Image (cartoon, rainbow, N blue to C red; front, side, top):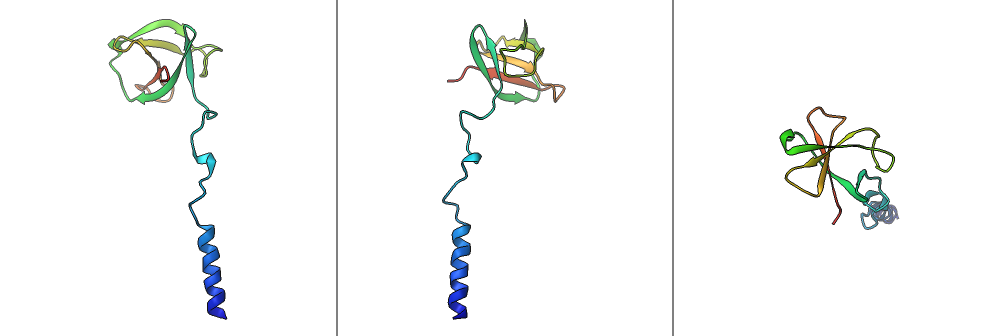
Length: 105
């Protein structure tokens, strides 16, 4: 009887540890928070952060982030000389890092 009770307990324990059901909060969804810039009516979304960049490849657009952008207000926006569809903002967290924003595919 003790063996049967032990086997049943182990089965319940294993069923509780099953990975078949993935918690949906671990998956990315369209409702997850993102940051973006709005330039000429188009939304450019954050894609990556570069540890450093050749700042000679960037041109100050003369624009700063405002209420239409999904990011902190008042940050200078730069455009890349190499890529037409990308904008950059100097990271506030790391001295030489740059955050890249581009159109979604």
